[in-house]
Image 1 (cartoon, one colour):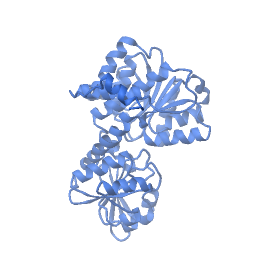
Image 2 (cartoon, helix red, strand yellow):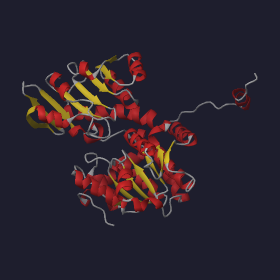
Image 3 (cartoon, helix red, strand yellow):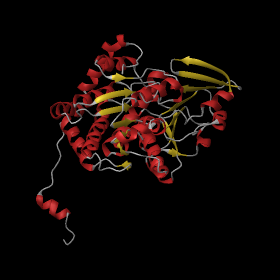
Image 4 (cartoon, one colour):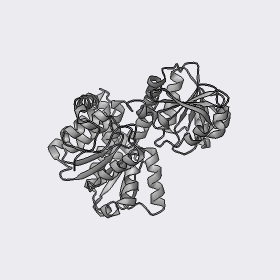
Length: 415
């Protein structure tokens, strides 16, 4: 099947972007060399739906170097970079994606990626798996398993598993230590503010930032906001996470109380309608809203539109909503993932670890083909340990090793 992309003439720019991230992704580079020798994915068909920018493209090339037949699409209409898609397509890979796809185009690209007839699924947010089960059930017998990249996707998979609807084994890549501890915290923390700062060109120091959700993503966003000189308010539904936020030095309150105080609002919950009608009525003039969760449902855009007396594009990737009383509220990136809709996503060094988990989890599926029942599975500790050790070596850090006597001590109970 031929690719469906926006403009093949952009391939040169895309290739340069891919080459740049490769130079800063030593773990994946090592796996690429290994896979070229061992060819563990020879003849294996992989359908991948992840934010289609340079780091994802390099993951696709690494898997292809091991013999995989790749079909690739994006996992968000605003995160696809057309030059990167062109770079992959020009190198012979099947690519179905373009920037700012309509909802119908986005789903058609998902379907075309599944027409590949995959043995392995690599998903980000659950759209690929959902479409596979609902529209392509005839392909399920040939799917050996899959990997899910993000928190929202894991939540959807566990709901499917709970309802008996999940028909394939899925590896919870997001829950791997070398993914969420670094990608969700340090990657999201930096890339969200990269997206906000380059889009708004506004200062953060001295302002109040409201972070909705104090999971690993929220922790990273709040930490970087504090580092930029902001006062930080956290909103939460989990009392344990709320206490943690308090002890980390942040104010904690309901969104209803935070709404009049914030200059920037960032949602990172994975839930819908976190910011909605009554909140908009209380916000100060010039409040900036953005989302760091996978889907554009955390900020209720329909309610914001309903309240607006005027809507305008105030700046690229900034939509302004004038309230009846003259206040302006600004929404970044159409409420989609701000770090990708308004930026380049996580730093390459961070995604090196996350995508190494994807690659090795895919290899684990092949090695355990037929042994895994339908369900959601944790990433084996051995994969986390291998990636962490590779990361340390890549940055020139050495650590201690237990002696045999220490191992015996730790394994003893009768001391």
